[in-house]
Image: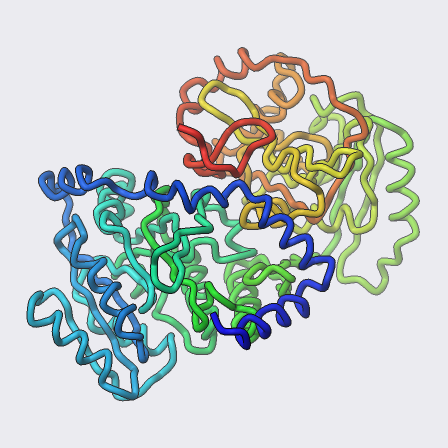
Length: 555
């Protein structure tokens, strides 16, 4: 990359993060355990033997997949590498639809060479360059497949990409859900000449709250023709965030979302790519805010989105309106008094909402749904310090949604390390604090330490409950203790259709090392049928070792 580009890139980062923020970002990246991926990436790629096996054992379900690529003055080398990565696919029933909005005939000439050798490669010269959205819609119009896959004109697929996607359709997706299927995969980044692999993105399964704050689906994306028709094509009014808007519209249209936890896509970093430098595309992030707000309105859960210092990551403030009845239940009187003093001083005559708050001392969260009144209950464990400013509003913004039962804070240690940002589980019933040990100033792997997200379980240090949901789930199991009791009610709430959300926008300090009463065996016996399934809010390629979450799993 040339000196001018590097200067502009660093200047834009300083403007966005500030000096301290950029230093922290640089330190975190340099300390990232994912740096070793560059030397290990081959273990995540299919072997020649695996590809041969896939070619010799065709899938029983083999729909035509149309790979749509909007092209615009694509460098010849990039275009050749893209087409070559498709020609070697172990899944044979595909077509490549190149929709070309270029001014010159460079793309057409390269494509013509390949079309002579393989009729599955199709090309159309668009009448004009309509931008990324309109050009992609031109590709959609070309597609004949039952399923459509999207990729950028300068990126690459792994040789097993289509096979793995279609296998997921056939094995993971029930027949009745296939008409509205949408599947995404993990990905990594490559340098301009494709010789260096870095920054692997091992993603969670479908995670609505996480998606509302950033488009983690990104690449590689496959969806049904029927879903496209129902949701509509790309909207040029959201150019720069057109894929984000499209994904959110698909979700709102009833998409059945699946995830293939394998790296199937290589996103190329170069001077003209979003992967290389997205800091100069502020319009894209403004459009991302608009896409989120439109989605929230469609869901009947309106809110305001704004850009953060994390590129492509947004803050969402959900709208509060009307009167909310809340009981604040705490194990220490000083916790109650601190919150009471703050909220009794708040004027509500200028706000579109009112909080009707009751206060109650409790010994534990067990039975809290019967001893407390109101729609929502905030529980604060002993030896937890939380600042009252906007505490109830932030938790309530999430917990008011009919699909959410619990919203909880990120817990920190007095030494400014993350104690817990939700709980992960393994097949033996161990509960592992997500992001545990991470410096409080760091943002975590793909910002998992700072973005609100659905989790499988929470540690109940500072949480808000939807009271009716607790009653519906039967309350907390008295035979379990500590985090196993917490995880048990989270699991039961998830079983009946509720979500559990951690919001790092609320932090609470855990002042002592909480002595956990070990009832893991009882928890394991109770959930032994569910525990073998990987945690859907995590990724099976990542470590489940305490203090080492969001590191690559060691074989």
